[in-house]
Amino acid sequence: MTNTAAADRIWLKSYPPNTPAEIAPLAHPSVAALIEDSFKRYASRPAFTCMGKTISYGEMEKLSTTLGAWLQSLGLQKGDRVALMMPNVLQMPVAMAAVLRAGYAVVNVNPLYTPRELEHQLKDSGAKAIIILENFAVTLEQVIARTDVKHVCVATMGDLLGLKGHIVNFVVRKVKKMVPDWQLPGHVSFKAALAAGQGKTLKPADTKPDDVAFLQYTGGTTGVSKGATLSHSNVLSNAAQNDLWLKAAFINKPKPEVLVYVCALPLYHIFALTVNALMGMQQGAHNILIPNPRDIPGFVKELKKIEFNVFPGLNTLFNALLNNDDFQSLNFKPLLLTLGGGMAVQRPVAERWKKLTGCVISEGYGLSETSPVATANRFDATEFTGTIGLPLPSTSIDIRDEDGNAVALGEVGEICIKGPQVMAGYWNRPDETVKVMTADGYFRSGDMGFMDEAGYTKIVDRKKDMILVSGFNVYPNEVEEVAVSHPGIAEAAAIAIPDENSGEAVKLFIVRKDPNLTEADVKAHCATGLTNYKRPKVIVFKDDLPKTNVGKILRRELRDL
Image (tube, rainbow, N blue to C red; front, side):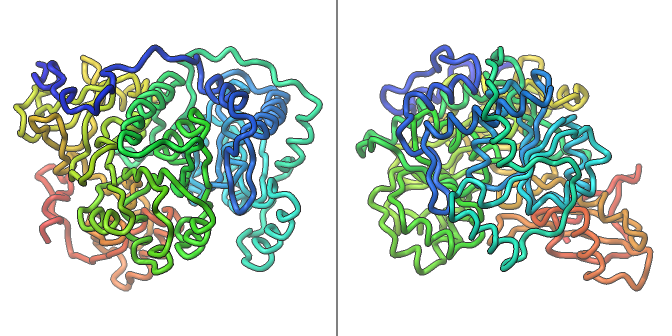
């Protein structure tokens, strides 16, 4: 059964003026073709700035050509996966462009992953090569022998920073001691890879719209992280949808010749990947890369140097900035658009942001599986709505009950999404794909919400037990699996608890096998197998856990404790 709201697309009546209901046919067959077009069209413009060093679109073209030619010289086949494990440094967008232009698929890896998490992702994706920042090479060293990775390229923080790079590397290695000792026999340095690619030709890759562009890993309900298979057409469609939606931002304020984006969210995360890197490059925008946004004083210092127009962020980031005295004194006149995503934006934070900056936070919604943006508030809005907005052009939202039937407007059901940005499926997991895709092509998000008469959707809860920490998915099963691998733990159950900094945090209930086991023991053990945001913040010891008659742990009862 189809929702009348979806059939009638009632949200279209709430669209900004002159915003079409559908995107035009895609102008490029691949993401590589789109960015190559931008490299030529905007050659003299600044593309990315990091730590005071700027590279132009023309330089991006040269660097990605030589790195792509080097990758091709390794004998990789079209469609092979290349992992990228770097924070927001200049090498990240260069490497991404190189991999795509050479005809391969990008596997984005969180640099803070533990060896266990990295090993799973490399094995599951079948990555043949990896480009990694030296700060994280020790993690790769521990697992590489058990993966298919044959080629390793190691970058340093200072590689593309010119003469300043030597000082940066010295400080990072010797003063801050941020690079643990590592050994990866046969690796090639980033600079050596560029030098080796100099004399080679980048052969055109015959990339088709349905070929895989990115594998974006997202937590699994079984505790196993799955790769959302995003094709070139998925990602290009979302860039086109966002581009149409962006036009409303300039209804009330003129568009500057070159838009300046703040890129504080990591480019390995789907939000920044599509909104900052791809949409930004499509527009010839200038992205300011922030390698460590957790360093709020350092981040604010960078913001002081620039006039910024577009600021994508998460509630936690907005909140942390608002609590910094120096942030209060910045010049917000050039700020045209603040984009909130990754997690719910809290109304008090949105109100404080508008009061300080004069800019409304436009909240959007999406998932790795939807490349990511599915809905967004109008960019010409003058007030924060507290909703996730309207479906983007060429996107349908249907609210459905447990049986897959549409519910009436205003009634709560599962938010289901259909559009050209919805993934092809989970990488090599048809069993998991079939669980989330309906027969009529909708993706079941696992989020519960309702649509109002104007076509705006409001999220009220999650169907899944997923925990959302600062915009990152944490699945209870994964936390529990790591916990019970400790010999002193008999049983474990993880749930979400509210957290004023991260939105939600992990609370872990433990049944001890070893009566002497302490909270510190549990936390130390979890730190070996889980990256920081997945680790339990609160630990509670219990004699037993509530279960169904077949022995399944009842997390909902634990939430009431």
